[in-house]
Image (cartoon, rainbow, N blue to C red; front, side):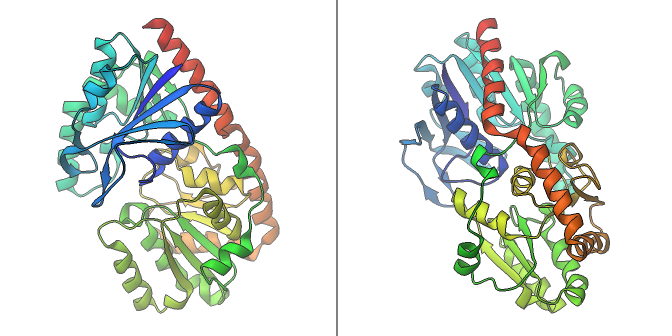
Length: 387
């Protein structure tokens, strides 16, 4: 099949889980013999990538933005014309409330091409201040309803996303739950010593956070929990991996200094190399994601692949990834005391941590990209046949 993937960012701009999913599933589909074209924006944070290139067999097409107001409001120049210029069997676009999805699905209808739309999360469900929530609801109303109706199939990350999408005009018969996952090689072994040496991390145990440094992801709650953990485990290292947004790393550093835990906190910035990122997971004793909301978390799946117990918030689609007390712990969002207590429980009981990690690794085997891409291939075949 000849497949078009349309997402706001792509390699080398791995901004979040959506970008990693598009990259990994496109890579896997290419390995399966399909011709994959990714259509994406050319620039990010003042940097600009080539207009076209081939990455691991994936044909990448990048477009300048005529409007770049926020992550959710970007308009690309020439996207519709480029999608219309060559025949595709399937057009797959990501994010229901983005202008690029409206353009992509319009082209699919015009060219009688099968279409799929992936919804990672429902934006109005994410806790935000009112002045951010208001424009999100406008975007959902203006763009979201149209895209949900236009797509042949709507792929959602977790079952809890279906009810709010139905309220936005989605059709239940079109919706399929398609989770994120791990590269097959994520289940292998990775060099922990190389990671520790490169980043000069001598403390142990390691408590790892991997995600955007943004208050919505909750890294501030992990820092707030650090003093109580350090009283019992004075050599513990708190490692934060991820790109910062709006200078938030400085806010976190100031918080760590105020709490007197600066020497135990390490900010490594983003890690895009697959081997090195997996080394980070392999190095930790506990993986922590105290996020305010998540459709599902790519990082949680990757930590599970390395048999790491996870402590995460009981929000969004995370309960569909982790069963509390079985393969990880779930805690209430915004409760650093409980967060710290659950982390300490795992550090205190290595046998419990190992057992939860073992179960986590077994559970995530079903989410390998070789399996996910094969399932996606069947969905593509269905919308292609019905177009």
